Length: 321
Image (cartoon, rainbow, N blue to C red; front, top):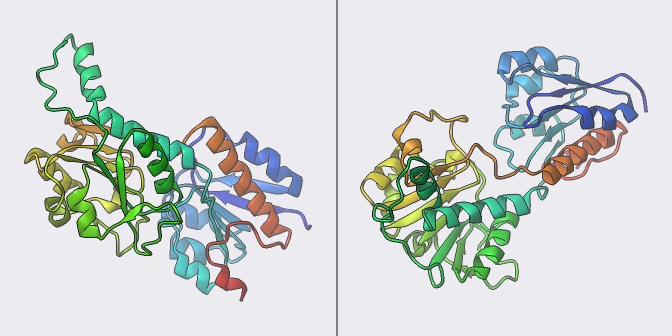
């Protein structure tokens, strides 16, 4: 393998790059970290790099076209909505992700939000720390057994959520475009049935043009009165203004949100300050183990590519045809 490779890291969600530098040094790869994820900054830095690794920063058409030597765009995560896939495809650049690195973390976080909402944990905690020791303002609470969890999307994470939910006695239904149950015997229903039957609706769909704000004023009006929304997938799936209206009108009893559009959100907005809404800072994916797994596997994808090999988890394999 020839020497002198350079890789641009657009952004990260961990404190240092010691692991990346240790792994990439075996291939004589220099890691260049962008000071911020602005498009103009990335364009300037991309001009002489051999690969781009990105967490959440947008790798746009302009960024990709500014990098004539780029041989790989590696997503440090699962979703691909921050990468211009058509441009990468047109230029013959493979794009990779790590589709299974944080399944137990996100599934556990989803269930944590559901349990916290159903048992009013966050509300009780805030009030108790303010000296309020009183059940009367909590509103109704219901036994989980026999209630219905609806999953929008039925990929790896949604299926892991289902396994955990069943152990709490929840009934689980799901909707996905493919209608595949992956031999789980999960009840697959229409989107309208999912909305009307779910006591808890959990989002596990990719953010695409078709799914943008799929949870909006119209679809929220079809949800079961008093139901709750969980989102550990992508913020762009939800019209947050419509969600606030649905909570104010008591159409929804609460929401647990880990993802937003934009990120970070404006935390001064009333939606995020309401006691019926639990907010976490896009934290569902993270654990010591998941981050080590993610970072290690992306580094090896980079090395594979620079060594002339096909990297693992290519999401646009048609470029090799």
